[in-house]
Structures are given as structure tokens and as C-alpha cells.
Image 1 (tube, rainbow, N blue to C red):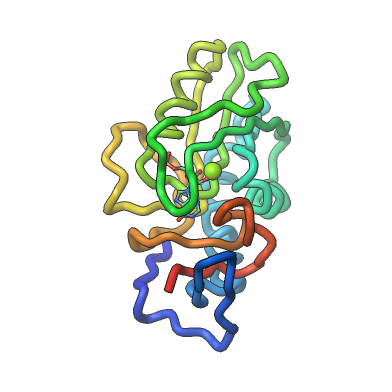
Image 2: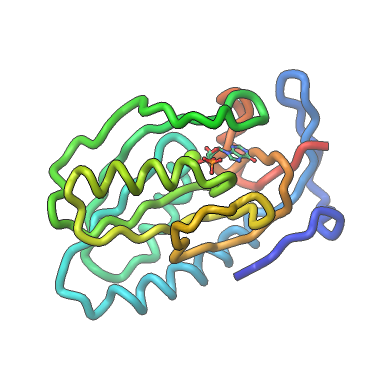
Length: 191
Ligand code: IMP
Ligand code: MG
């Protein structure tokens, strides 16, 4: 797992402005890509010799880019479905996970791998695990591109974590500020 410290990651990319906020370069795409390579190796090791076909659950909207990149690296039969949740307003968690779009397929008895963009307070992941268990999922695994370890205090096991970051607000590679900034390939941090 790759760890990033805020001060050590000065890049030549330019700062960006989204609405009222300035963001500076934090993690460039080459590092993101390498972290996804590494996490995919672990998932492949765990799933390559299994007989069941896992269902990848993309947590929209933030995970859309990560899910696409991760899937290209998986070397076993897998299916894809999505759910849409929302808990952030501006740069802070509201503490309430809103379900914008629910499950669209039967997950009874299925092995589900949750694909998250970032785990922060962990409320989303806790609520999602409860939802999946109630819907009859067999086994539930959690995979996240990013983790803020200083904030996460929940007991749900995070099976696959690509990168750990500081407790700062970030955008890019799928993550947004007021729905903007998801399109950047690199990750930027609030100045
Ligand atoms: P949690 O429920 O507090 O773990 O937050 C999870 C969700 O909040 C993530 O899936 C993101 O969509 C959003 N989120 C958390 N931290 C950030 C951030 O730094 N930038 C953008 N979105 C974030
Ligand atoms: Mg998310």
C-alpha cells in the first residue's frame, strides 16, 4: 500500500480552481495507476482460483473511474453492477448516507466486492454493508482506492486499500467538490 504525505508531493501540474476553492496537485496519475496495479494483484490472488463469479459493486458517482481502471486489471470472471449513494455536501460529510439509486439486480447468495473511491468516516461503507446483508448477499468484500486512516474508526474490514492519504479534502480521479472536478486524471488537494 502506498502512503502519501501532504508536504512531500509537490508536482509540476498546475493548481486548479473549482468554484470558491483552490486545489493543488497531490497524487499524479502514474502513482494512482501503480497503486491500482498493486491492489489488483491482491484481488487476483484471492479470486483467480475461486469458482463463484463475484459481483463488482461500483458506488456511483465517485468510483466510476476507479472501477473502470480496476476491472481492466482483473483476471477472473466477474460481473458489474452499480448503486448510487451520497453523503458529502461541499467539503464535509453530512453524516447521513442518502440512497439516490438502489440495487438493480438480485444479489442473493452472491459474493459482492464493493468498489469505493474513498473511505473517510466509514458511514457509507457501514450503511452499504448493512444494505447488502439485508438484500441477501453471501460474502461482502470492500475495495477502496483511498482511505483516510486518521478518520476511519469503524469495525468493517477494508479488504483492499490502494492508497492511504492525510485527512484533507481532495478532488479528481472521480472525486468531486460540489459535483465538479471528477474529470481530472490526477488527484488534487485543497490549498
Ligand atoms: P464516508 O461515509 O465519510 O466514509 O464518506 C464516503 C464518501 O464521501 C466517499 O465515497 C466520497 O464520495 C465522499 N468523500 C469523502 N472524502 C472525500 C474527499 O476528500 N473528497 C471528495 N469526496 C469525499
Ligand atoms: Mg463514494
